[in-house]
Length: 363
Image (spheres, rainbow, N blue to C red):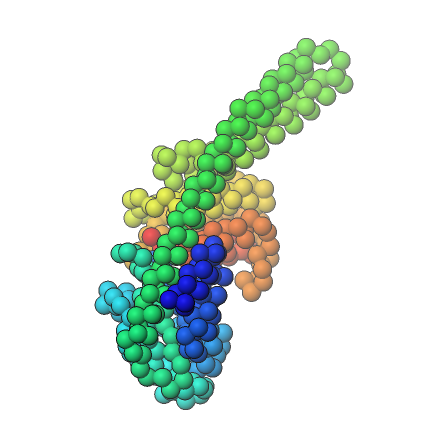
C-alpha cells in the first residue's frame, strides 16, 4: 500500500507524458528493489520506447538500437490481444538475440515480467521490469506490478483527455481571434482602401494623387495579408473537404494549383487539419520565395494505411542538406506537426531545381 501511495502521488502530479513515465519507472524500481525497466507505448499500432532505466549495454548500445529496431514477444502479445495481465515470466527476445551475438554485456539480465498498461478497456502499452539473474516473480510481486500498471494507464488516460481539452480550447481561441480580426482590423483596412481610392479620384494635384495611390496599394496589400492570417487561424472552407480548401486558398494567394487525388475518402479531423496547415505554409513559401506561381499537390493513400501528401514547385529552390537543421521556423513547424502524429516529413530541394515536400501520416 505504501508503494502504491508513492506511485499514485507521483502520477497525480504529472502532466507531461515524456517526463512523467521516466520518473514513475525510476520510483517503481527504487521502491520494489528491482534494477531494470522499460516502457513501450503503442500508438497507431506502432510501439515506441517511452521510458527506460538501467538498461544493460546489450540493450542500449548504438543509441538504443536493440530497443527500437525490432518487435519483441511482449509487444507482439499486446498487439494481438493475448497480453491481458501481468505475466511471469517472458523470456526476452532482444536479450536472447544479444546473447547469441555475444558482443555486449547483459549484466545478468535474462528474463523480465511484462504488464499491460490499461485503463478500463483502453490499452496503452507494456511495462517490463527485471533484475540480474531474476527468473521468477511471485504472485504478490505480479499483483503489485499489475496495480501500478493500472495506475499508470489511468494517468495516461487522464493526460490524453487533458491534451484533447487543451487542443479544443486552442481551436476555440483561434476561431475567436479570427472572428475578431475579421470584424475589426479587416474591416478597417477595407475602409482605408476605399477611402484612399476615393481620395485619389478627388485629388487634383499629381503629388497628392500619388500619395493616395501609395496608401491604396499598401492597404490592399495589408488586407490580403490579413485575410491570409485569418485563413491560417480559422481554415474557412475546410468543412467542404481538404481539396476544396486548398483550391480556395491557392486562388486567394494567387497561385496556379494542379492537384491529383487518389484513394482518399475521409480523413481523421486531426490528420486533415495537419495536412491543411502544412499545405498553407508550403503555398505561402512558394508565393514568397519560388519566383513563380505554379504549385502541385498530390494526395493519396498507400498500402500501409498511410496518407501521403506531396507538394512541389519548379521554382528557385535552395541549398539544403538533410543532415543539418531545417532553415526556417515554418519548415520546422511542418516537421513537428507531422511527427506529432507519428508521421514522416521529407524535404527535397536544390538551388534552381525547385522544392518538394513529402508528408506521410498513419491513418
